[in-house]
Length: 261
Ligand code: PEP
Image 1 (cartoon, rainbow, N blue to C red):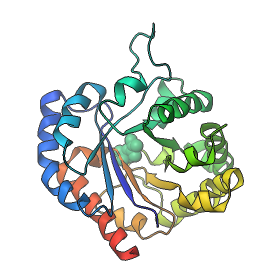
Image 2 (cartoon, rainbow, N blue to C red):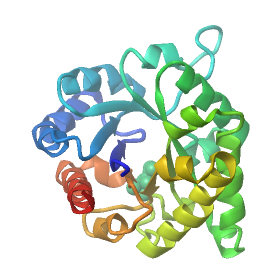
Image 3 (cartoon, protein in one colour):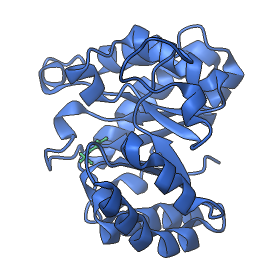
């Protein structure tokens, strides 16, 4: 059985003071939800708030995560953050988010370098894949997600692959309020993402790898995703900035895990 994982991607939001306030509002309730170990919860603030958020979740079952990372460990890479800096602070790192691909030139090749660097430095990657609207409308979803999965997992051994979390995030659903349908997301994840992973690593490993859905998840629509057999939690953007909303989504993941037990 796969443990559901709910991660909040704060993107470029919250000052230091606001980040402190949000974690203070989340911490007690999320700790209660994650305490039995039925669900994992990750908070991914901007880099600048990461030390503070990591400190605030220390000693709780909650995890901190980063939103990006460079693949080198040190050197003349102005503005970048190394895996050896992150692994002192957090357990997870989001890699290949569509906004990184769209605005910052991230490619399947750079995502793969980052995945390898993260794993080499004991960080768990959350690898984002997903088609944009034009690709969706052109019937290219399968080809796009399969290529992105193959790119991100290139040359990875089975054990390393099994520790990765994949987030299926159709680009047209991110921040738009137009979420995919539960059944539609489940089909892409089950057939195309797990299907590709099965071709690479075999069915058992494909079944062990957790795959989240992301794209306009809210407390209102979350049940639609968490009743699907292939969806193992959510990567949450906008709703992770509102304490009550993120708590409700985490609670829904816990209920899903308890139902499956
Ligand atoms: C995201 O940023 O990964 C995301 C899914 O955003 P939103 O929930 O706001 O669509």
